[in-house]
Length: 304
Image (cartoon, rainbow, N blue to C red; front, side, top):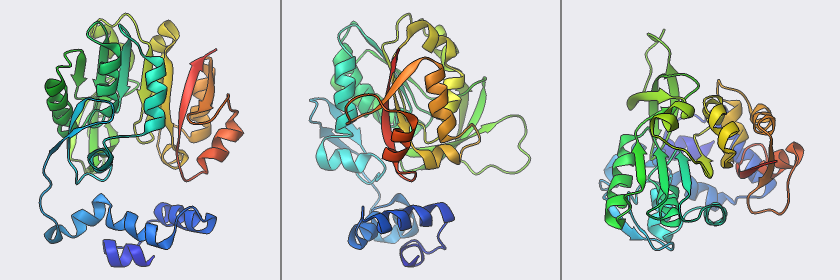
């Protein structure tokens, strides 16, 4: 509670407080590291603007060999890439196994483009990457990165995915963000940084003339069920391998379903699930246990 009050200048939110208490009691984080997470958070930077210079964009040569434009002050994604030249190495390794020359990769929630750029390097000039990201600031960085690497095989779409065509309000937290669908005039004001179009993935890929889908990565901060609801034809027709974040806290807090329901949706499409970084397939109980309720894991879903 003191970290919230002293470092962020506010009372703790129940979900956040429970998250950190669980990690402390389980011994998965020390008090020193806990303080470091708070000081390194985007919210801390926003709460203490006079102690920080405005962030500048860096060009980073990554461990994968491509160059990336990132904001090193973005503690959601950019900071890690600027510091290490790498990002989510286990997920990156899984994608390298799935994609080859001529393949098609769909990156849903592309953020600043790590996986889009990795995918572009793997599928080559004869392949194709569809990068879908609602934050135009992230898309601008991805566009600069693609240009610097000569990747002409990335289609960058500044939009969100949904079950039906419409619009969404996006509230950003660094390069990450949370969406709120806008179904007609809102009953109350919506706090948002951007408002962008939302469409079903089936329609997006059809309009783009996509005839092959080898892999889809989905990382949309708890809106994963919403993406699946608009992707039924794509999944049924192409049977792509899916890489998806599984974050029970975000899924259970969303209006589109819950964590158990999301696993059920994946299995209903005829997929077997495993946690990336672990051997073999996993049942729902094992996946839930590995996620720990308040943490997240990355799932690999393969068609049966």
